[in-house]
Picture 1 (tube, rainbow, N blue to C red):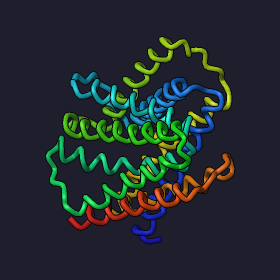
Picture 2 (cartoon, one colour):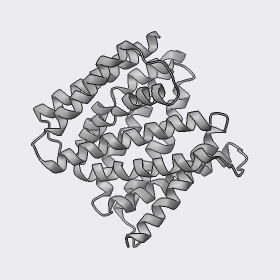
Picture 3 (cartoon, rainbow, N blue to C red):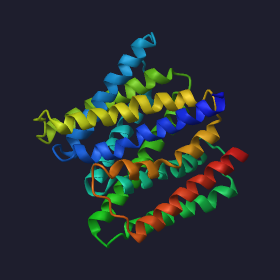
Length: 285
């Protein structure tokens, strides 16, 4: 097997594993509240990150940086909105709207990092926005609109978290930053959970599905993604990641009822094509 093919397979493996996340998030909410699920997700991610850092023989040290608390708060908001939108929308819609992340990443890179924005980015951004409006009009239900707003918002907070981490913590060790980020989110979400009287978590299927979600998105999926970058370009890896909504759809079928409407197909198509175009233009720069 060639190195290029190995990189492609690793990248697809990352996409497939991370595509389980929206499905597991939805299933976990059958017995957990969004706040409980958010806390468990951050808590499990903290454990995975700590174990991996220790396995990598990283020296865990105290870091004082104003950006750490800032990204921890933003990450907390992102996790909460992710689960609240998951409670309203189906995993396929969540998977499609999750592609909004790259749009915010481009815009925030321009605003905060002063990186140049190309004219070729304009059309994909407009297509993504249009696609989200089409999806929001699935059946005119106001709760669906709130779900779409929540899903788009969580991608904004995750993008802002990563941009600020790049701006203020570029010289810090990535694993240590990730550990602090998840730890701060865990503590904040614990306070929210206790303050709202939702601290009584029943051990069951909901906890196990959050565990799987955190394992897929926060550890195994990222590990395969970073490994794939050793063999293929960042551009090619991102192009492969545009297929994520397809795998979310396929993985949803065994677990949940999936309703494909014309709005979802048209809006989702616009979003997938826009992200594909944006990655192509990014690779050509």
